[in-house]
Image (cartoon, rainbow, N blue to C red; front, side, top):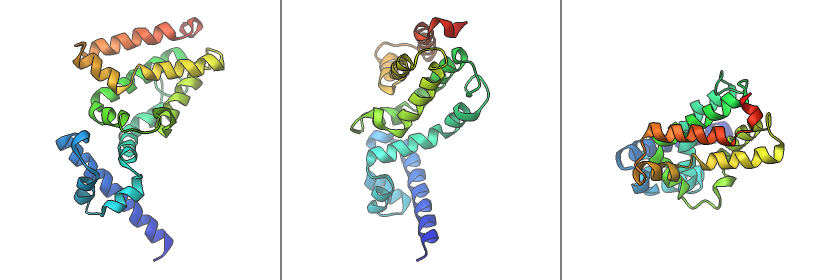
Length: 195
């Protein structure tokens, strides 16, 4: 079989698996769905799922990447306040607010993904992308060493497990979480970023 045909088949299989996983997760939640169930719903063998995604964490990460694609495009190339041409004192809070809202809307997926047992969430390509984006904006108003650490600290504030805790244990509303995040972001931005 020619190589382009194999690649096209692999892409179709991967998309079928992602579609099946989305449908199953919508019905049962990501924590309740097995890789076998996803393979069966996609009409492919379990080996196909593992070849495409390596493991459950890989499948969850691929779904998260798929869901965040529009947001990442807006951050990478869109207009202010999310886009790269926005001043850092506007962009950084806007990016974190958008990411927090996204995690609120997709918290069941992100809770499972954060608990998926990957060696370190800080090694995932997604985390690296968000960290680099924030770090580069912060570097416009802070020294590089501080920007790197502050980007990590800001991303910790939008982890799904923290958001779920604030909602379910502390009883904060979505608006309260967003407001408190905005206050926190302003408190850690360098003073000259507000100028």
